[in-house]
Amino acid sequence: MALAAVTFATGLAFAGWTLLGPLGPGLQQDLNLNDTSLGLLMATPVLVGSLLRLPVGALADRFGGRRVLAALLAVTPLPLVLMGAFHHSFTVLIASAMLLGVAGSSFAAGVRFVETRFPAHEHGFALGIYGIAVGGTVATALVAPRLAHSYGLTVPFYVLAGSAVVACVVFLAFTREDPEESHATSEGANAASLSSFARSSGLMPATLFYAVAFGGFIACFAYLPKLLVSDAGVTPTIAASWAASFAAISVGARVAGGKASDRHDPRAILRWSFVAVIAASVGLAAGYGNPLVLMIAFAALGLAFGMAAGATMKLISQYFDAELGRAAGVVGAAGGLGGFIPPLLLATMAGSETGYTLPFLGLSVTAGICLVIAVRLEPRPVTTARRRPEMESEQCR
Image (cartoon, rainbow, N blue to C red):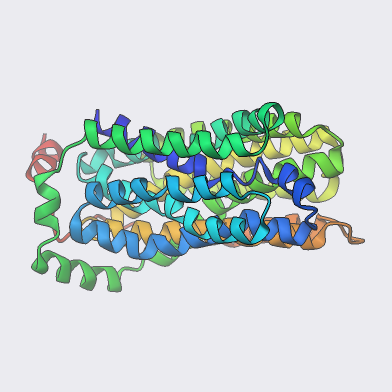
């Protein structure tokens, strides 16, 4: 019940966090924005949410995931209400988009909340299920443009604000404090966590993997409607449906990637995922103007990004335990930053002689670097400053 509640609540928070992507074409027309300004607006919540994951992860380790996540959910409706009331002002939208980053930072607190409630050998699957929260982006892509088309741009913001309130209420109603979280945040455990966290060799590879996996997912989801409308000639509503399909594939693959990583080596899952990213991005670089190529390549990217994200979460749970909140904060921040830069780069390249060829080739090169690192990465057992008794007994059985 706790896993379902935290997944539902974070999913609605993510829906609000990524709302500007599906509404981007409408806001651009309404405010007469150029591509660069639109890219900045869509990327701002992603950037701020990514940076906030660093302190949020540390706070979750210190005070417990439930308390921190509840506070973030309580703040989320405010920027959405402001956007709905003042969506004709670019200045207010930018300022509200910065505050909306709070919703995206909830991921790090949620990872800590989930990890304390499952034994180590189920972390991949549990965190994969929690990753379904990203599916809030699917609901946003499907519903928001249709609401805007039928009732105006104000309504989607208010609907998501109300949904964020519901998310907070559901989370508080169906979850309870875990005594182990209080134990994990003692001063001694905290000091030990910081020490092992600073010495870990698994943090930087996982950070790069998630920057490409989750960052690539966010970037593609945010910019895909714009790409389809401007280069493939489809309507905004159809483009939003395509983006929703891309997100649905990635969310399902994330669960599969986590479950597969419980049964197999997560490094193997990562290697095959990055091979698929390389192939799909090269295909996009060669033929992104063809709707069929776009459909096939983005489906492959959604599958690969989701599998890699699920495997990365399992990987950091193998390296970290009492300090998992911090690790999730750092890795999650990298994922968000990975989603911040590509939309700006794509917007800058729009209309140039090379078009989007160079950005997609850049993705293939980056995935190639990840592939090499995944091949060379050495396995390592869990290092822990704290282990729950029920986890030890389950593993002994």
